[in-house]
Image 1 (cartoon, rainbow, N blue to C red):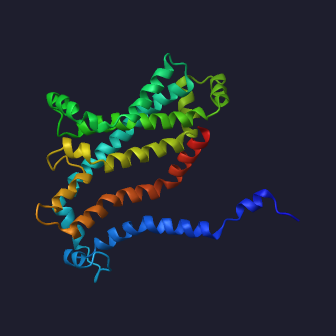
Image 2 (tube, rainbow, N blue to C red; image 1 turned 45 degrees about the vertical axis):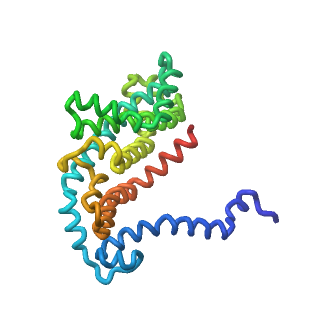
Image 3 (tube, rainbow, N blue to C red; image 1 turned 135 degrees about the horizontal axis):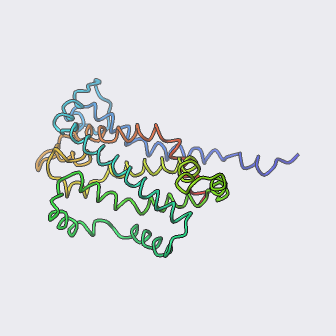
Amino acid sequence: MKKSYIEKQKRTNPMVHIFLILITAFQIFPLIMLFINSLRTDKEIKNFPIGIPTSLDFSNYIETWQKGGYTSAFISSFSIGFTCVLVILVFGGLASYALAKLYVPFKSFFLGYFTLGMSIPGFLFITPNYTVFTKLGIVNTRLSMIIIYSAIFLSFNLLLLRTYLIGIPKELEEAGKIDGCSEVSVVWYVTMPIARPIFSTVALLVFVQCWNEFLWANTYLSTDDVRTVSTRFYKFVSQYSMDLASVFTAGAIAIGPIIILYIALQKKFIEGMTSGAVKG
């Protein structure tokens, strides 16, 4: 008896598995070496960049944390990241719902406007924005980064939310209205529970983008009390020397929260991305 098409599809060529394993190893190897080198001394790394630490010494983390001022850096990065997530989820969510579900005059214009916002590189506006922010007196403040990041990351995430919301059947929302729900109640009790995966995905994307961004943060933040985690590498690099052990340790400190956050939200992240792709 011939096997069905579905059963044949389930059979995967072993070469595909080997290829995927090699790609995974290629991606994970630098990450592994980052954490391994963070436990080695500067002399060991410079003598042999790829190697195993002679002993598990975590003093690098204590010294790097103190020298880099990571307490204030984490406060800045978390406060900026969480505020931007809140701003984009609220305003981007409301705007995406309106563009996906409601009658909005000039809807095509707004869609084109946000699409255009994705195509223009943000660094083109560094100089004019810096001039305006200087006159407003908000340069070298977390508020300046919140405004910039919210504006830069809004377009893509708004359109991503809209793509998902379009796929939610209108019948569900109409049923809620028939039962007496207002537009706000429909959004809160019907649409939001269904769209929770994509909102979790957007929250993770925005936070990671804010956490990793370097160019704007390095330009607008000049004092250590407001500098973010991504700008702390300069503490360990001088004109004539570089402390490689501290650089690797700084990288491990910077990437650690992102790894933990992704592991905690990976199910929601994958669900939101794949569902959004199918629904779009």
